[in-house]
Image 1: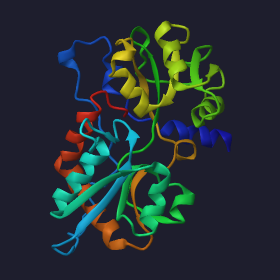
Image 2 (image 1 turned 90 degrees about the vertical axis):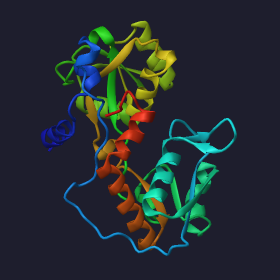
Image 3 (image 1 turned 30 degrees about the vertical axis):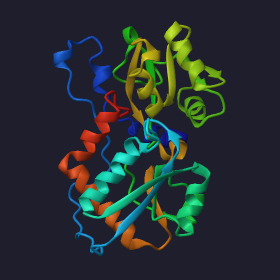
Image 4 (image 1 turned 60 degrees about the vertical axis):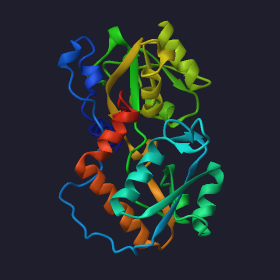
Length: 285
């Protein structure tokens, strides 16, 4: 059983990122960054029949950049916000977007004080008892990062034997490492900043953590351009969840189907990829 679990986990490793594959290649030779794709290209559904006067009341979290946060004028901005606006454009309906504390979002949708929450909410078992979710529009992947001169196109347990890997203590990432990379030297640390600083200083060989947060760091000034992704993303749902969807009220199939239709149209037309790469030039995938 353990062998089967291990094989399943490593089957979920995706194609290595262009960044890792081409760490030493000329910039002109690098392919475009990858973007997430969780939509079946063969699936087709009828255009939703929404009333012409429909107004979708979106809500999002107050402070989770780059997904959602307050801009200089106090209005909501970020990937989730722009995606909500693109959905409304695709559906040709009006929408409003308000920011609220994350711990109030589920109640607001369940009590019909909002139509949809687009705030990087994982569709957990507990939340599914209270809300319905659209198809995932991205997943919480995990990845390794290393210094640029040590980037690996593929990460295997053999490659990490005896290597020092920093990870945040008590997280699913630590549990995954200890389950599948048993010969690595796991260095559990208090928070993500400590793991990244250790990598930047050369005190560890790799960091393993949330791919979105790592991409944000790699593309930011605080990394000092020291590091790059190694290997591809891990998306094993038992450790990293089943995906991020838009939450709607239980039984509101009209809204859920309309959002799913719009999400697929945005992906199929390439607009989703354009939006994703605007916020993640170093893609988490």
